[in-house]
Image (cartoon, rainbow, N blue to C red; front, side, top):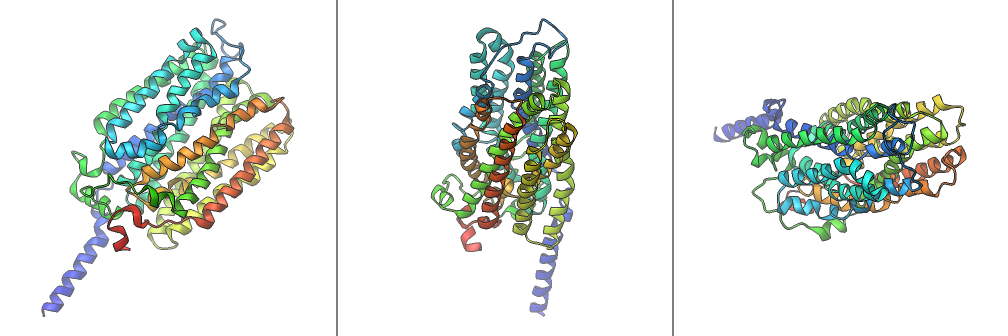
Length: 466
C-alpha cells in the first residue's frame, strides 16, 4: 500500500512537471526582457548602420533638397566606415566578465549612453574637424557598442527557457534587422529632405535616449533579481536552464572554454558571418549607388528590403524550430546544423549569381539581394549556439568569439578603398565570389565540429548531472 501511494505521488509529481509550462504565464517578464533586448539592438543599429548610407549623402551635394546642407569631398570612405570597428574589440573581451562581477543592467545603460552621445555629436564634429572628427566619434561609439552582443547573450542565457529558445532568441536578435531597416529607410528619407543628413543623427539619437528610460525602469540583472516576476515563472526558467542564481559564478572557466572544440566551431562560423555581414552592410549601398545607379532615396529602400525579407522568413522558421524540437521530431543539434547549412550554402550560390549580372540587370540584382535574405536562418545555428553550450557563461563565450570575429571583420570595409573603380561590375564580381567561399568554409566547420549540449564546465554540478 505504501509503495503504491509512493508510486502514485511520483507519477503525480512527474505529471505536474510535464504540465508546468502550461501553468507559466503565456506572457511574462521573460517576454518583457526579450522585447527590451530587441529594442536595445534596434537602437544600437540605428546609431551604427546609419553611417553606411549617411556617408553617401555627406559626400553628395545633390542628396538634399536644401542647398545649404554641408557636403564634403572625402577619398577615404572605407577608412571612415571601418573606424567604428577599430575600437569595437577593445572592451568586448572583458564585457561578459564585467557583467558577472559588476552587474548587467546598469552597465548596459551606461555603455548605451556613451554610444549615443558621440553619435549625436557627429554633425558638429564633422563641421569643426572634418573627417577626423567623424573618425573620433565613430571610434568612441565602437568602443562602447562592443558590449552589445555579449549583453544580449548574457541575458538570453539567464532568461530564455530551452523550449522557447528559437522564438525568443530570434525576437531578441531580430532587433539588428529592424534597426537596420529603420536606419536605411529613415536615413535615405531624412537625407533627401530639407533637413538633410545632420538631422539623421539628432532624430535617431533622441529615439535611443528614450529607450534608456524604459531600460532603467523595466530591466533586471536576472530572474532572481526581478522585483515583480512570479515565482512559478522564475522557477520555470531556472529549472529549464539548470541554473540557480545562488551558485557562485564569479570563477569563469576560461581554460575549459578555450580548449573546447564546440566553442571554436562557433568562433569560426561567426567569424565568417561577421566578415560577410560587415562587408555587405557597408558595401551594398555603394554597389547600388555606384555600380547600379540608384539615387539616395531608392538606395535606402533597396538596401533595407533584404532585412524585411529576413524578418518575414525568421518568424515562421522560429516557430517551426521550437515546435519540432519540443515535440521530438528532431534534436536541437539537428536543427542547428540544418539552419546553418541553409543559411550559408543557399546565399553562397545566390551571391555567385549576383556577381555575374550586368549593370542593365538592376531588377534581377534586387531580387537576388532579397533572396539572399535566406541567410538569416543562421540565427538558429551558430549565432545562438553559445546558449546551448553554457547558459551561465553565454555572455562570456560571445565576448571572446565575437572579439576574434570583429578583429577580422574590421578590415572588411577597407576593401572598398582598394577598388580602383567602384562602378566596375567585374570588380564587384570578385567581392561576391569571395563572400561565397568564406560562407561555405566557415559554415561547414560548424556543421562538422559543433554541438548543442550543455558542456561540463557550465557549472560545478553539470558534470555530475550529465
